[in-house]
Length: 324
Image 1 (cartoon, rainbow, N blue to C red):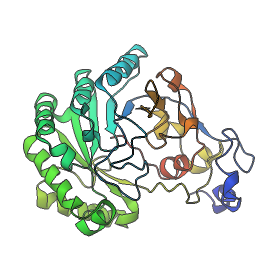
Image 2 (tube, helix red, strand yellow):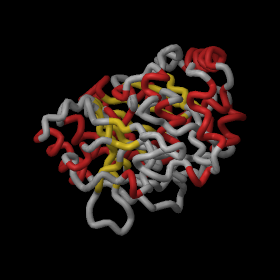
Image 3 (tube, rainbow, N blue to C red):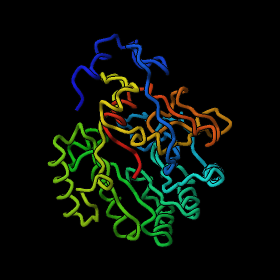
């Protein structure tokens, strides 16, 4: 860890002075930025509508939030074609929401990415939207055709029902487990992963042991010790104090900008009222116009200035990434 005073000085300043100027921090230092050095992951936000309403959802997804409207297969295909034209070394195409299976074109969008030769990661709560017969048939078909190139990462905030249900509603844990069992039995070629929440879980070793016990009981082929298969995310509270990241921080932290998520990923969104989809810097900041990089991947290849608390707490200091 860096010396306490190396990153702490911005915390003593009024909150209104931090994360304001894209080029300069509240202490007058040059703000860090991250170049798109290895564009291997392209995300699509399928829409912010969700079947549940979680108090701590960073994107405020709910049954009523349609600030990001449904993505379409045609839009996914357009951006995948542009990625090919730009010779991006895409490995993975991710789909997030909201709940992706609320989108009626989710199966088609995943199929387009898989047929283009990419791995596909779908973030889901594995609840009722995924369990509709037409969706189940589509998932089973994709799993049969593409196998392990398809991954479902299920949101399980905790390995025990009470803590998970406190965030997602009574019965949510049982419903998600039912969906995971269905995936285990009917999409056996696809991979399963989970995502938990650090603030609920306490010490990481104990959390992973709890998940391992759950996976063993349920016969789920998920390695709880693998950070890519059992992801434990730091929290994303914009109001919580966190240092601004200066250009000097890379050396202080012993961290390369290439390790930060926006060095390797972009996310396509379609905002309500917009005529076309556009590209956001990352999955975490879909609404802020300062992080909208334009309507093409070419335009979105510009460096990203780390002018948001999520950049600091989640990505740089938290070391987290949304990709697989």
